[in-house]
Image 1: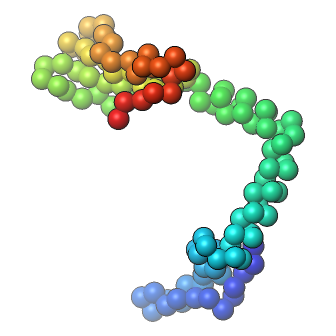
Image 2 (image 1 turned 60 degrees about the vertical axis):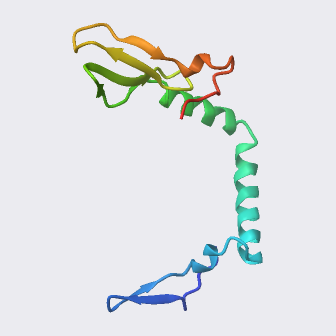
Amino acid sequence: ARRDEGQSDVLHGVEVKDPYRWLEDPDSEETRTWVDAENELSRSYIRGDVREDVLSELKKMNDYEKVGCPFKVGDAIMFMKKDGQQNQHVLYRQVDLTSEPVVVLDPNKFSEDGTASLG
């Protein structure tokens, strides 16, 4: 990326250089040209065998249980949880800390492909 060494601001009496400010305008021809070149460079790298390796590693790194912060609703303890394979978090309810969690709402069952969500 081109560096504009002449671009700077004075903030609280301190000069702060901003050599890449020209990239802040997403509609400028120069920014679009730079983004296109960066995208082509990235795509040329991930088009090969690397793409599948990266996807496989990302899936492995994301394959663990995730549990949200519990919250109270009346006397019940509620929390969201999903295993590494689920697309959406499942809402659970417990009567107390020693009781078994019960599924209240599982948005993964809203659609066959698991892409429907609850917001």
